[in-house]
Length: 290
Image 1: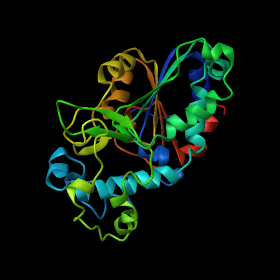
Image 2: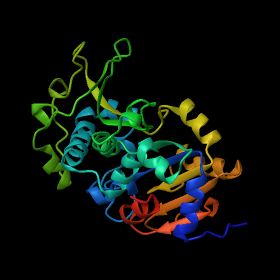
Image 3: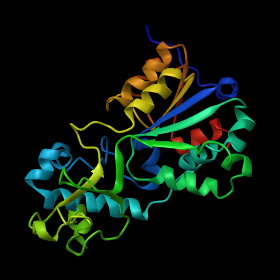
Image 4: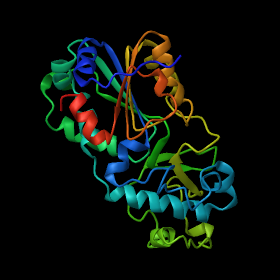
């Protein structure tokens, strides 16, 4: 039976104030207002390109040039983007000195499916105004379960080196190819030797994201957080990508509350106690009193 959702912001704030273990599960809708195209829906960045051919280990093995051109395009897009009001609200809410004014006895962890790094930038900005009390407690957590766009991984199993690299462009051969991607005219002929290389062993490197068919990261930590959460905020995502799709369901089954912040209705909303439709950069700051 479908649950009757409340749209009452004050009722949500009352629940928030009493919550002790809060998690937020974020997806592409969180970053849409920052100019990061979403994978699905109108104008989705996968519309012109076969996601499975560009975002699987097999696709990379078959055509690393095409794959790297696409991820270079995504890196350049993310490099120009700034956190929006929803990112900033979550970043500020991560600080105990701010959060405890709203939810006095709470912990908070952001679990994001996004790879763009904007939530991390927002948290870094929030930490600039952190108090000594904030710095004396456990560092606020962001769990990037689908990896990071600016991580670069060695493809050689015996090396496995991973490093953060925000260089733009990541290699000379990719410079300007983001415009070819935009025009749907990618050139697949960049020599393998000219693609990004591992800085340790010089083997071919790959983007440090989790591709279809690969295991998300931090799953054990996330499972523990979801298991004890009494409030789950679902921000800019729907029940289409597993395992994140089941987290709100688990919290609800355990007796916790679920609040959804999405542009439109989606699958999985039946698990929600609260449903706030509209741009999350507008609804979320209000809900978190930011």
